[in-house]
Length: 98
Image (cartoon, rainbow, N blue to C red; front, side):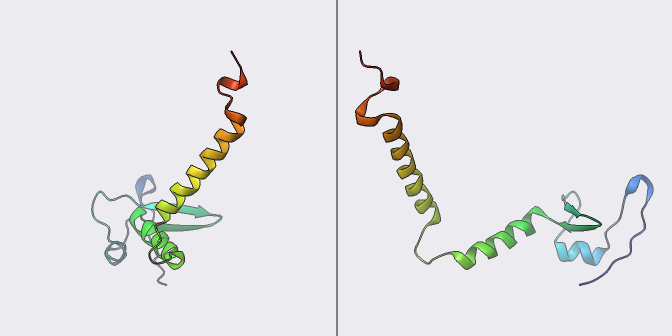
């Protein structure tokens, strides 16, 4: 970990050192995310957060298993159960028989 001491400039601006910008892959116009936690802040980018999340998810991935397909299958089952709950015995339209 590297510590930077940066002067606060006019209007609360802080200039990030070039080596820090390079290590984060930042270019002019890029947006950064600053997370405040008490008296500490963390500066990162959306791209780096996605990359970190993907690395975490990769630990739990099973080869040959599509989490999207698995998720959709679970949602189809839930939808069928909800339909059965709402329309027991095939009664449609809120259970009204005409």
